[in-house]
Image 1 (cartoon, rainbow, N blue to C red):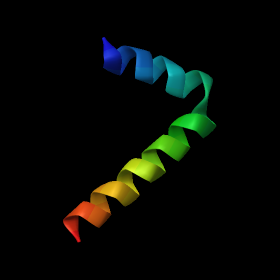
Image 2 (image 1 turned 90 degrees about the vertical axis):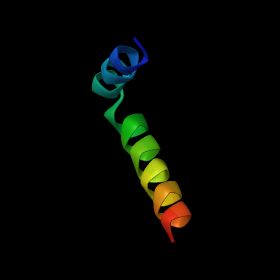
Image 3 (image 1 turned 90 degrees about the horizontal axis):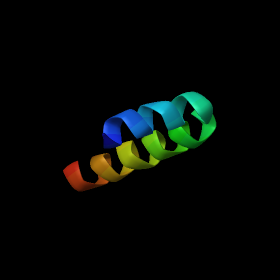
Image 4 (image 1 turned 45 degrees about the vertical axis):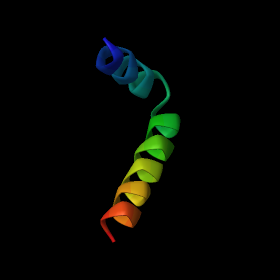
Length: 33
């Protein structure tokens, strides 16, 4: 259900989703490094 809400939110606010994705990727890279 969370995925569905996130998907809908990403469609309505692509900019917000983009920022979240970028932050998540950076955080993941930092943990991997």
